[in-house]
Image 1 (cartoon, rainbow, N blue to C red):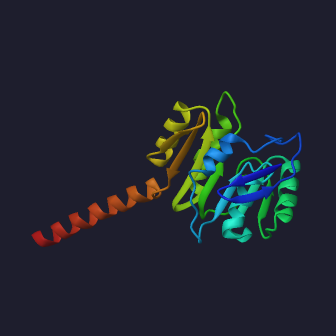
Image 2 (image 1 turned 90 degrees about the vertical axis):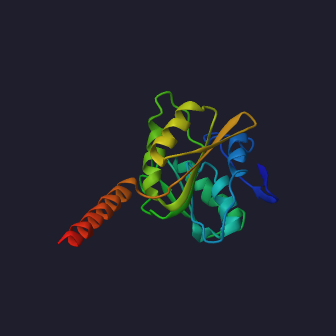
Image 3 (image 1 turned 120 degrees about the horizontal axis):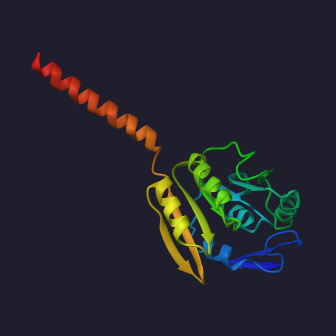
Length: 203
Protein backbone atom coordinates (compact mmCIF):
# COMPACT_ATOMS: atom_id res chain seq x y z
CA UNK A 1 0.00 0.00 0.00
CA UNK A 2 1.30 3.43 -0.98
CA UNK A 3 0.19 6.47 1.01
CA UNK A 4 1.16 10.08 0.38
CA UNK A 5 0.57 12.52 3.22
CA UNK A 6 1.46 16.19 2.81
CA UNK A 7 4.19 15.29 0.33
CA UNK A 8 5.60 12.38 2.35
CA UNK A 9 5.38 9.05 0.56
CA UNK A 10 5.02 5.88 2.64
CA UNK A 11 5.30 2.33 1.35
CA UNK A 12 3.41 0.12 3.80
CA UNK A 13 2.88 -3.60 4.05
CA UNK A 14 -0.51 -4.62 5.44
CA UNK A 15 -2.48 -7.69 6.43
CA UNK A 16 -6.12 -8.70 6.22
CA UNK A 17 -6.18 -8.86 10.04
CA UNK A 18 -5.36 -5.12 10.20
CA UNK A 19 -7.79 -2.23 9.84
CA UNK A 20 -8.05 -0.86 6.26
CA UNK A 21 -5.62 -3.34 4.66
CA UNK A 22 -6.00 -2.26 1.03
CA UNK A 23 -5.67 1.53 1.17
CA UNK A 24 -4.97 4.39 3.54
CA UNK A 25 -8.13 5.00 5.55
CA UNK A 26 -9.85 8.26 4.63
CA UNK A 27 -10.57 9.02 8.26
CA UNK A 28 -6.91 8.68 9.18
CA UNK A 29 -5.93 11.00 6.34
CA UNK A 30 -8.57 13.49 7.49
CA UNK A 31 -7.15 13.38 11.00
CA UNK A 32 -3.59 13.97 9.83
CA UNK A 33 -4.74 16.95 7.78
CA UNK A 34 -5.52 18.72 11.07
CA UNK A 35 -2.13 18.04 12.67
CA UNK A 36 0.95 20.26 12.48
CA UNK A 37 3.98 19.00 14.40
CA UNK A 38 6.68 21.12 16.04
CA UNK A 39 10.28 19.85 16.33
CA UNK A 40 10.04 19.03 20.06
CA UNK A 41 6.72 17.19 19.86
CA UNK A 42 6.26 13.68 21.21
CA UNK A 43 3.59 11.56 19.51
CA UNK A 44 1.57 8.51 20.54
CA UNK A 45 -0.05 6.56 17.73
CA UNK A 46 -2.86 4.87 19.67
CA UNK A 47 -4.16 1.81 17.84
CA UNK A 48 -1.37 2.00 15.28
CA UNK A 49 -2.47 -0.70 12.84
CA UNK A 50 0.14 -0.90 10.09
CA UNK A 51 1.86 2.20 11.49
CA UNK A 52 0.83 4.87 9.01
CA UNK A 53 0.36 7.62 11.62
CA UNK A 54 3.42 6.85 13.72
CA UNK A 55 5.73 6.41 10.74
CA UNK A 56 4.51 9.67 9.21
CA UNK A 57 5.23 11.43 12.51
CA UNK A 58 8.66 9.78 12.72
CA UNK A 59 9.52 11.00 9.23
CA UNK A 60 9.02 14.55 10.50
CA UNK A 61 10.25 14.30 14.09
CA UNK A 62 12.54 11.28 14.25
CA UNK A 63 11.62 7.87 15.57
CA UNK A 64 12.80 8.59 19.11
CA UNK A 65 9.90 11.05 19.50
CA UNK A 66 7.22 8.53 18.51
CA UNK A 67 5.45 5.67 20.30
CA UNK A 68 3.12 3.20 18.58
CA UNK A 69 0.79 0.80 20.38
CA UNK A 70 -1.90 -1.67 19.37
CA UNK A 71 -3.80 -4.56 20.96
CA UNK A 72 -2.88 -6.77 17.99
CA UNK A 73 0.58 -8.41 17.99
CA UNK A 74 0.28 -8.78 14.22
CA UNK A 75 -0.32 -5.05 13.80
CA UNK A 76 2.64 -4.12 16.00
CA UNK A 77 4.94 -6.52 14.16
CA UNK A 78 3.93 -5.13 10.78
CA UNK A 79 4.19 -1.54 12.03
CA UNK A 80 7.76 -2.21 13.20
CA UNK A 81 8.63 -3.79 9.85
CA UNK A 82 7.10 -0.82 8.02
CA UNK A 83 9.16 1.61 10.09
CA UNK A 84 12.33 -0.14 8.95
CA UNK A 85 11.06 -0.31 5.36
CA UNK A 86 10.47 3.44 5.35
CA UNK A 87 13.82 4.31 6.85
CA UNK A 88 12.90 5.34 10.38
CA UNK A 89 14.35 3.77 13.50
CA UNK A 90 13.98 4.34 17.22
CA UNK A 91 10.19 4.16 17.40
CA UNK A 92 9.06 2.51 20.64
CA UNK A 93 6.27 -0.02 20.19
CA UNK A 94 3.96 -1.71 22.69
CA UNK A 95 1.40 -4.50 22.50
CA UNK A 96 -1.60 -3.90 24.73
CA UNK A 97 -5.14 -2.62 25.09
CA UNK A 98 -5.25 1.15 24.95
CA UNK A 99 -2.51 2.66 27.14
CA UNK A 100 -1.93 -0.64 28.98
CA UNK A 101 1.87 -0.73 28.56
CA UNK A 102 2.49 2.94 27.81
CA UNK A 103 4.19 4.49 30.83
CA UNK A 104 5.02 7.91 29.41
CA UNK A 105 2.93 10.88 30.54
CA UNK A 106 4.49 13.65 28.46
CA UNK A 107 2.99 13.30 24.99
CA UNK A 108 2.19 16.47 23.08
CA UNK A 109 0.00 14.55 20.61
CA UNK A 110 -2.16 11.45 20.96
CA UNK A 111 -3.61 10.45 17.60
CA UNK A 112 -6.31 7.82 17.27
CA UNK A 113 -8.88 6.45 14.87
CA UNK A 114 -10.75 4.47 17.56
CA UNK A 115 -12.66 1.26 16.89
CA UNK A 116 -16.42 1.60 16.68
CA UNK A 117 -18.27 0.00 19.61
CA UNK A 118 -21.88 0.64 20.50
CA UNK A 119 -21.13 1.09 24.20
CA UNK A 120 -18.20 3.50 23.69
CA UNK A 121 -16.17 1.69 26.38
CA UNK A 122 -12.92 1.76 24.39
CA UNK A 123 -13.37 5.38 23.35
CA UNK A 124 -14.11 6.37 26.95
CA UNK A 125 -10.84 4.79 28.10
CA UNK A 126 -8.91 6.42 25.26
CA UNK A 127 -10.20 9.86 26.24
CA UNK A 128 -10.10 9.65 30.05
CA UNK A 129 -6.67 8.02 30.26
CA UNK A 130 -5.42 10.15 27.38
CA UNK A 131 -5.85 13.27 29.51
CA UNK A 132 -3.39 11.83 32.03
CA UNK A 133 -0.91 10.78 29.34
CA UNK A 134 -0.64 14.26 27.82
CA UNK A 135 1.72 17.03 28.84
CA UNK A 136 0.05 20.34 29.64
CA UNK A 137 -0.62 21.94 26.28
CA UNK A 138 -0.72 18.53 24.59
CA UNK A 139 -3.58 17.53 22.32
CA UNK A 140 -5.60 14.43 21.63
CA UNK A 141 -6.92 14.08 18.09
CA UNK A 142 -9.59 11.53 17.22
CA UNK A 143 -11.48 10.79 14.04
CA UNK A 144 -14.86 9.05 13.85
CA UNK A 145 -18.15 9.12 11.97
CA UNK A 146 -20.06 9.87 15.16
CA UNK A 147 -20.42 13.41 16.45
CA UNK A 148 -22.42 13.93 19.62
CA UNK A 149 -20.94 11.39 22.03
CA UNK A 150 -17.32 12.23 21.20
CA UNK A 151 -17.93 15.97 21.25
CA UNK A 152 -19.64 15.80 24.64
CA UNK A 153 -17.14 13.40 26.20
CA UNK A 154 -14.06 15.29 25.05
CA UNK A 155 -15.55 18.58 26.17
CA UNK A 156 -16.37 17.16 29.61
CA UNK A 157 -12.85 15.78 30.16
CA UNK A 158 -10.78 18.51 28.50
CA UNK A 159 -13.03 21.52 29.04
CA UNK A 160 -13.47 22.12 25.31
CA UNK A 161 -13.04 20.57 21.87
CA UNK A 162 -12.70 21.73 18.27
CA UNK A 163 -14.56 19.73 15.62
CA UNK A 164 -14.00 19.66 11.86
CA UNK A 165 -16.04 17.72 9.31
CA UNK A 166 -13.87 16.34 6.50
CA UNK A 167 -14.99 13.88 3.81
CA UNK A 168 -17.81 12.53 5.97
CA UNK A 169 -15.65 12.17 9.09
CA UNK A 170 -15.51 14.23 12.26
CA UNK A 171 -12.06 15.20 13.49
CA UNK A 172 -11.90 16.19 17.16
CA UNK A 173 -9.01 18.15 18.69
CA UNK A 174 -8.93 18.67 22.46
CA UNK A 175 -6.10 20.34 24.38
CA UNK A 176 -4.97 19.63 27.93
CA UNK A 177 -4.81 23.01 29.60
CA UNK A 178 -3.88 21.68 33.03
CA UNK A 179 -5.05 19.27 35.67
CA UNK A 180 -8.44 20.48 36.87
CA UNK A 181 -7.79 19.20 40.39
CA UNK A 182 -4.43 20.98 40.54
CA UNK A 183 -6.05 24.21 39.41
CA UNK A 184 -8.71 23.87 42.07
CA UNK A 185 -6.10 23.36 44.79
CA UNK A 186 -4.10 26.35 43.58
CA UNK A 187 -7.24 28.47 43.59
CA UNK A 188 -8.08 27.46 47.16
CA UNK A 189 -4.52 28.13 48.25
CA UNK A 190 -4.61 31.53 46.57
CA UNK A 191 -7.80 32.48 48.36
CA UNK A 192 -6.31 31.32 51.65
CA UNK A 193 -3.29 33.56 51.17
CA UNK A 194 -5.49 36.56 50.39
CA UNK A 195 -7.56 35.93 53.49
CA UNK A 196 -4.39 35.59 55.54
CA UNK A 197 -3.05 38.93 54.28
CA UNK A 198 -6.40 40.57 54.98
CA UNK A 199 -6.39 39.12 58.49
CA UNK A 200 -2.84 40.32 59.09
CA UNK A 201 -3.70 43.87 58.01
CA UNK A 202 -6.50 43.96 60.59
CA UNK A 203 -4.11 43.09 63.42
